[in-house]
Amino acid sequence: MSRHSRLQRQVLSLYRELLRAGRGKPGAEARVRAEFRQHACLPRSDVLRIEYLYRRGRRQLQLLRSGHAKAMGAFVRTRGPNEESHGAGVPETPPDEGDGPRKPLDSMGAPKTPPDGR
Image (cartoon, rainbow, N blue to C red; front, side, top):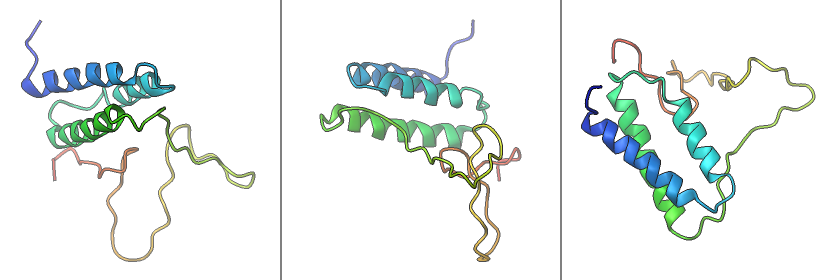
C-alpha cells in the first residue's frame, strides 16, 4: 500500500478530530460522515477544491469545539406543492440575473473546477 501524501494525512486527521468533537452532539457524527462520503470521489489532482474543503472543515471543527454548538444539522430547502423535483440530490441553479456568465457551483457553493484546471 502506498504512503499517504501530507494533504491526505491532514484530511484524515481532520475527519477523526471532527468525529471526536461531534460525540454527544445530535446529528454531528452522521453529518461529518455524510460530508466526507460526498467528497470522497474528488480526484487527487483537484488540490484547490480539497484545500478549500479542508479549510472549511477546520472552521467547522472550531465551531464544534467552541462549546456554543449543541447539535449539528444542515439547512435543507423543502419543496412546495407546486415545485417539481429536478433530480435526486441535485440542487437547482438560481435563474440567471442577466449580469453575465456564471460558473456552475457544486453542492458546497464552491465553483466547480473544470477538468483542465482553469
